[in-house]
Length: 227
Image 1 (cartoon, rainbow, N blue to C red):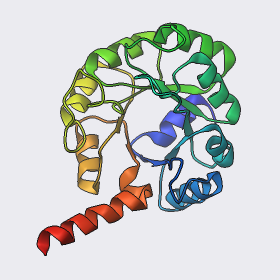
Image 2: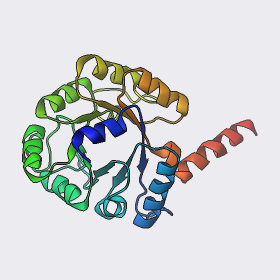
Image 3: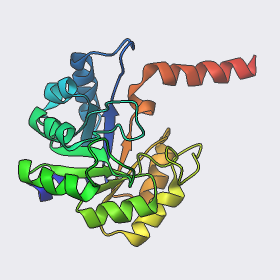
Image 4: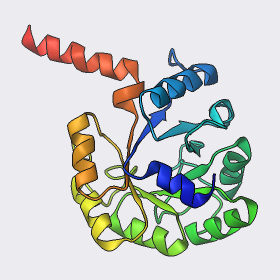
């Protein structure tokens, strides 16, 4: 699938983020692969997964796979270095999601330097997970193929909204020509539709679809408030 084909596949579609973390009941690459397959059956246009084993488990799916590697306890931990990004590419990701903020990276390479070097290693697309308009503008200038709102509310530049940062999505749509993927705190179909209406090229949803513990807690909380 060419880069153009992948973007066409994602245009106007839903990307489902399938992630579970150490200690959680679903923390197994085989489980995440099954969750991903179920999402595709439901109509997902793409899948987003974390960790090299999970990427390998879903590589070769019929839809584009966005891969990332969360590592370390520093501010920059989403595919934080060039070596992490190369490993994600080698594991089989069609699109590599990397920290797209302007913060200092652990290997001290700039985002532009990282993207330039990564282009020499792989033909995979590059998604920059941003936290602000300035991040997105810098990532676009650096050559990212997709701009994500993944880190909106998780850096010091914007407040953390209860739902998706619709204002940021609209700002990116108005000022950037690179496709925008809305991601972060999208918990309902209505919120997903609002993100698309604000100018998102595609919408990524994780917790509300693939994290049973959190979804269960929402219902429990609602019932507790009623009792």
